[in-house]
Image (cartoon, rainbow, N blue to C red; front, side):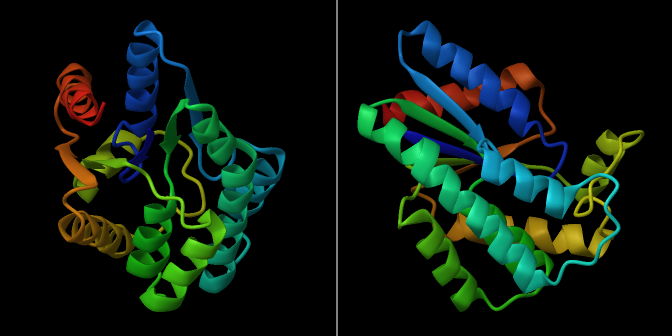
Length: 202
């Protein structure tokens, strides 16, 4: 099984990824956890280049989309695909839908060619289940107060509103794959809802 987590910054994705991984490991399942961009040497180098906390460099939207796709291609080939072949459960913090939300929704790139790039980078490998932790831009901003935002997090409110709108549009278009969960709830309630959906799939 391949599960991806999506959502805005501070929606609790990383927390829920680790809660789910622990729950499944307690059942005796082998779980591989990954994150985007990163989880490989190539991916981490790209992450530092594009998202570096101290980076003020300008990155053209197409360049950004292609760099994220390159990191994803490496992640699929090096981590995700081999784990699936072994029969492991794969849980990934962000995947192809992030590119559609941020670079198409947020940056305004044309969707058709970006989808082709995502398809090429992943080799057509898609998650069995995508958990979208939905959170308003206002709440996300409140939760991030006091943190050091990366280059994408520093974008204005309108950008993040477009990202959220695109995420919800993607979920609406694929209700059999997406599960939308209100990220304002407690971590415990969210984890319970996620596990219920995983049980259905398993």
